Image (tube, each protein chain N blue to C red):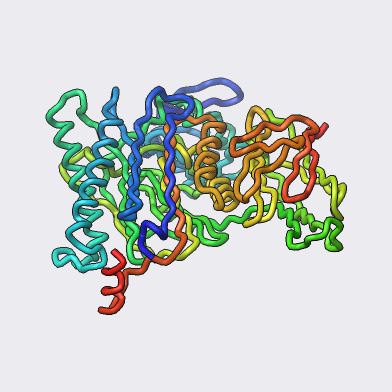
Length: 254
Length: 275
């Protein structure tokens, strides 16, 4: 289905314009594709560029300007239901083309035959992530070592909007060592616990709950005293996790 | 160190949550330091056929060539190193095989595939790609896309029509400007990069990067680099948890050591005896 603009004034629809051309012009002069005979409209006021399923609005330096969704706008990538205001006139952009995320068929990859150009790859984004280091001291032979396990709860990771929205947020609380009582909110999709090279486990937040999986190290994490082995293990409210000598309680935030 | 000792490679492919069949094909050959990933397209099972041909032609032909030549030699014809030439020539060969199959069998008409393939040799990697299958690299803290999609959206980003952020809203995803098997010839994009010990390379089909943000992919690799197969599982799980609209395939390569080609007569002799 082609996208279209619906011209209206004071809530009364005047006309529909399908966006079939690559460039649809809007202005006072009659040669425009969308001609609006009103003095508040510049002779060549604006244009909408359509590339396949995407349309872009551009004000062509009009005297009185254009407003999109309530804000004065020069250029705008139109989304379904956007409203362009030119003087007293409104143009509503409709493109009910299913988006990529709502239709399986539509997102089948297709080939466009277009002239190709060689381009150099550019440097991408830098990303860092927050690991939670639970560093435990291992060289001590005595049971009551003076250097107690150092539990280093990293600066609270930036809480990202959780895509797995249906899973309630859970918390890990440290139950022993000098960091006794410290809490870590599992707000990200993945959180690693442990010390790289010694013992590491990952907690994955998934739509149907939280899972702990062994990542590396000679021994597997314990949940309620039992080894979880190599397979992911779903955590229940108030499970006790033991990793590199550090005990932690897992519970859902209420 | 020989390339097969220097690299750890894992791969996984999954049909996703929506599609009934998997049109992706993946393979790797640690002995030759070769990885190949293809994402096929076309009606019925033509997509699988196209990606299957691409992967098998690439794997067998490159392997065959590497038994005759050294990848670091100069190719007289193109002036490039053989590693680069071998990938380019064999992507073209795969292209022709698919094109011919599509021409001769009506049920395969119009089939095609994207491809991304890497050849690790002499502390470097040659990467060839066509379409929107990607290679990413994690080096230290930096996770970045190395290949640049041959897609309408990427061209729009390059020409400044649309910003990277707004591109996520575009309804013109999945329109590739180059594909293997559609025409009688194809121009793969091939580049050579230096490799560092500790690097992790991710080859994936768009079923991963359309469903999982680059940032989350990078964080997953960073956290799980100690367990490559778990990292691959987690990536596929995240794509599926986010909807899994497409087939999703990943190949992960970890560089555990230096694999420079021995130079000088003594080194060559030593390596010859080691064989």
